[in-house]
Length: 342
Image (cartoon, rainbow, N blue to C red; front, side, top):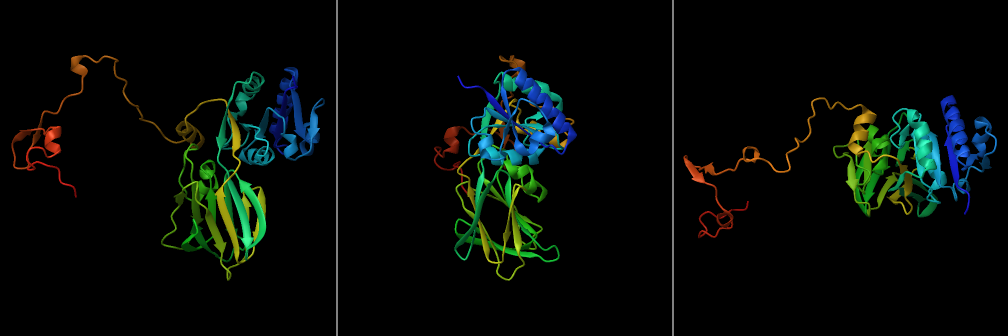
């Protein structure tokens, strides 16, 4: 049987992340699991007995899981390494909000134990594929887990774009940019730009204009089968494309950015089956004081506890009449009491 292997990725610019990486490596090694680290992080982590890997997709190939120590930015960077291999990412939040992370810093030791004993589930998150063309010529292609954002490159001038959905023009926007996001990215840049929060299991794409000078500039939720395109108008200043804040491409006037559902998802390791609603409340510190929830009823309610039955309704002309039965609603009383549609 081949030896188990785990890749550890850390935000080495944070001393806490370096210390956490050293603890993780120590505990995994003690459990007989081979640990990999990236060559650009190995010197800062400084642990002996690890396999130093090139900072490419090859680092995650054959690994059981990738433990990511840092914030969402670190996890997005690791996702670029694991998407091709499908290796699940397990994030430990050492940043601020950390929506993509599965565990918090105080749970680090218990998280390592869950990896050692393989007690975690894996879920897939939708991605987007992004293609840039100009006059029919391919300029570049990339992808994103959170979002692709088309932004103005000159602060003093507005960006002029036209949006297209499924081959049909939708609207021109004079704006600071446009965010095309996945449900996972709905709580990131798209959220800051005024977009809706979308539950992760919903399959959709978001289109969110940023500070648009237009009457029709609301966030859009479109089908995952749709193709979204944003064209930078010919007489506008140059723009820039950012994908997950990691990958960038200059967009000259006339560039066309096409966004569609990604061919490969990103896989995330899950330790807890925490409802997304609870995650929202925790991460954003939402006030829920006063919530009581649905009152639980006994399995066999007593007659006094049974729901009251409505036995009469007040007629339009005054007085009391009996509630009409199904036959009355269907109009079987000769049509006088049939339901009208309006």
